[in-house]
Image 1 (cartoon, rainbow, N blue to C red):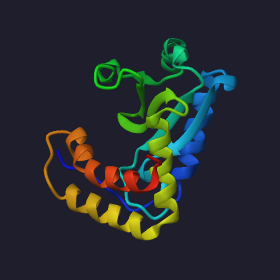
Image 2 (cartoon, rainbow, N blue to C red):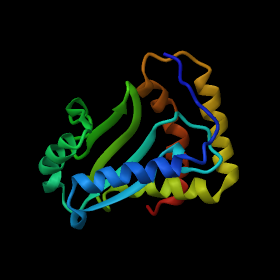
Image 3 (cartoon, rainbow, N blue to C red):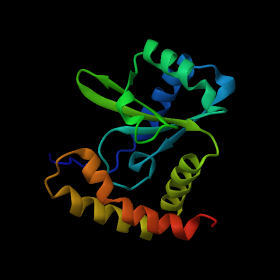
Image 4 (spheres, one colour):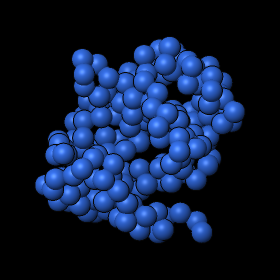
Length: 169
């Protein structure tokens, strides 16, 4: 599998806003927080052109109704990822066979929530780290992968190294 990265697109924040509207229409606004994460949320960073979204629930007890409502509003639920991450629910949305978004659903203020926002915010404010991450991504994208998950796993050491520097112990 080839990983296709494209230069940063200033339309990505607008695509996130459109996805956020769809999610808000699906869910009760009093129990969610919606954040743009991943490479498309970092100005200047090359990325796969898919919007990553972090959907935060006030309680993970809301996950079953969230699944029901998101599916009813056109998102595809991927239950196979529950085994590896039982406290996350993953959705995708596609149009005309093209992936538009990945929606990672977790409880707010959990380690998953905190790590993803901290990494995003650090790359937004530290261009030298963003550029090093981009070079890693570009180098990895030149290789053939069995799956996109293998590509993502190859970036983990870099991400964990940054998280170790920026997160409290």
